[in-house]
Length: 193
Length: 248
Image (cartoon, rainbow over all chains, first blue to last red; front, side, top):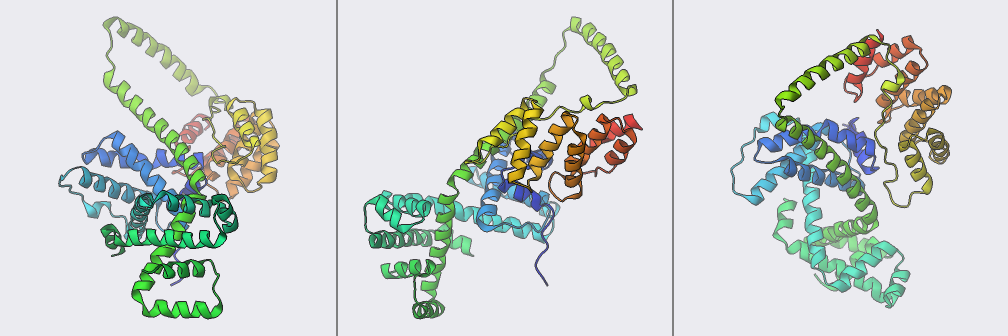
């Protein structure tokens, strides 16, 4: 088997990545009403749907820019599954309501399921990484921000008033600290499995 | 995990180790699962941080833009449902409503049997081009001119922009529309034809506008042929079908 064929709906992913008004509008006109209906029929409201959809599009944007997301199934199925998953997680968080979904009706082939699952894992990891980054001390946060924004370690050292060797070492230790925080979190171990 | 290991990870990732050191490190990864796991997480976090800080601004701009479109979409939907739900007609108003219907029916019938024209269709939605930070003033000029229907100025800006960014299909579409408005059919049709045969997201839009261009040029047969080629899943399919009915 060769490489998987990229679906023609990749144009929606590329459009999001380019912040293309035409494409974003088209997504809202074409794919959003179905999601809104689903959420309304499952203990939600239009306002809730609006948030879920916006979050989902942001996740897709992030995955596309960070991991070069390639769509191998129709956008419709992929987007719907992601919104659905996000909404069910919301419901689980806010109450203990039992939610029944007809999986057979919703699943649009393995490819969409697989891709939506990967994106969900990506999303949860991003959230976990952000949460743990915020737990770091200010010295580490500032140093890491400077390191990744300025790029040249010499300049970073200069801007922080420290030596080059110290800045390099400190960068390793700060990411090391973050690595430990992430590895210790129970959520991380769930995501790995 | 010891601090030295993190320093080693960083040196490895920033390619600062010698060949011998690389080999030694890679063979340790194979036999020390704990080290390997810490390294994989370190690497992933390094990628996360890189993206987080490098794309902070672009991501913020995207979120703001998305928010704008989302608000507009949901407000539109809300206002439609609210009007539907709360309309109550005062008895006296009924006569007025009845009278209006007669007038509307007259207009509708008139529209049905009169030849459609380009001006029935040239209501463009506001365009938004300057969504990414650091983009130049010219985009803003083009966007403002287009939205203010100053198509001569828009054309000037779009043609300069396309010179810089020769493969940008979105700019080409707006430039074509501007030229269509200015009656520069040769330029407009050329651009639309190029988009029509291409594979961009604007392919179907281009077919629709190419049809409208022929309509404006009163070449009704050509307009019909082109409009009939709009696929069913295109945004303008329904509108095109109505226009086809009027022209046929």
